[in-house]
Length: 130
Image 1 (cartoon, rainbow, N blue to C red):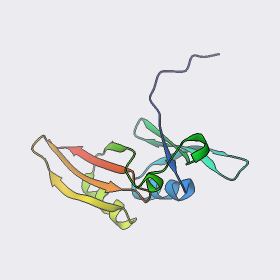
Image 2 (cartoon, rainbow, N blue to C red):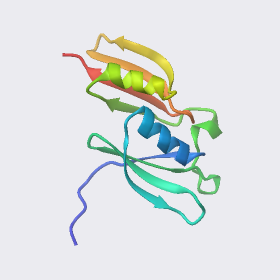
Image 3 (cartoon, rainbow, N blue to C red):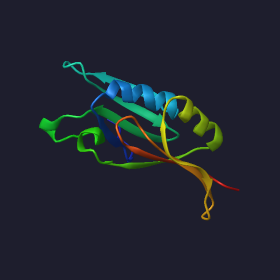
C-alpha cells in the first residue's frame, strides 16, 4: 500500500470525551473528521483545525491516561493560530469557555487570549499582527 505521510497528531484524554467533542467543535471551531465508537460506549474522535489534527478519547486510569480534571493540574497547553481572533474569542465566550487571559496585543507581535476547556486543558489562541 501507500506510505503514510509523516505528521504529528496530538491525543488528549477527557473524563467525558463526548462533552469535550461538543465543546471543541462549538467553542473553538474544530471539525470532526472521524469517530470510532468503542464497545464500552466510549469514543475516539479525530478533530481537524487548519491542517492540524487532535485526537480525543476517554481517560482511563488502567491505561494511565488522565484528564486534567482528575489530576487537578493542566496536562497540556495547546496553541491555536487563527485568522479572526476577535470573532474566535466571542465564539469561545458565547460557548462557555473559561477565559484566563483576555484579549491583548503582545510586544512580540500577536493578538491573543487564553482559555481553559471544561476539563482543564489550557488553550493559547493567537493571531499574528500585521
